[in-house]
Image (cartoon, rainbow, N blue to C red; front, side):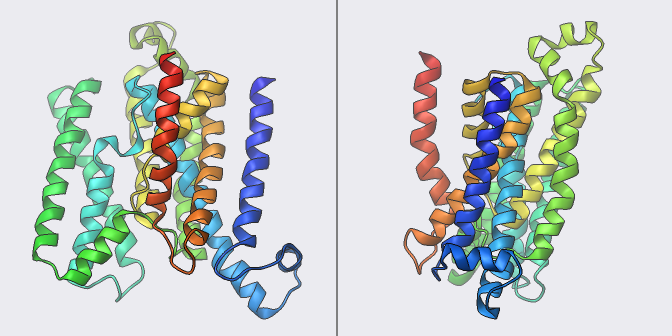
Length: 328
């Protein structure tokens, strides 16, 4: 009953966040005008603002925020560490290296898909390198080896980024820094469709792994005795969770704290049963990033604040509060 109540509250919060995201922005629209557009009425200008600018951006925030929170919950379960987050295996470094390379070569403006495509490719390359190093060292995919591989690969991509930026022009450096701080400003219906194709099936697959994750939380050996095929489940969960995070970072940049604090907060409220934790983390992450994007748009309008700055300002004190509560 507790889980159903939390789910209903988070769903209501997500719907409210979506309505607020459509209602507020650089151009103030009344609630009646927004509802008029959603019911098929409204002026051409209002329809353009709501349907072509704000709604795709809000839906992209839902997909990226939900995906990051869900993948963070899965990583925390697999690594048995509440401080784990989606970028722990070098995904953000690989994506940022791909994006910075495209910006430095001046290819970002020639085709809209070059930048997210390069970021996604860099993230997938990072995942492949981390898994390749980990499997070559220990075919059982030891958690410690995987984490060390992620640290090494992340450091390598950080060095690549530093080299590219040191040779780039000032405008390229600024564009790269802004991209790495995260933004949903470039959201279109096409990007929403691409992220949805990657995120939604992967999210359903991860939620379907809730029971094996519950058993593995007790211990991998015990999970094996109870019928869980531990190594294939680990590989599948690691790969799919990394894939979801890669899709998000490719189209929104590196947005921190969503995959760290959201699963941690949900766990404190409803416990560690992944049958509830995973779907509720998705809903909470979606609502959180939608509201964070709204704050990024209206806090200093007409100037837009990078969304990563907003999530950090909210996430740091919130995480310290959660950490203090969990230690008590």
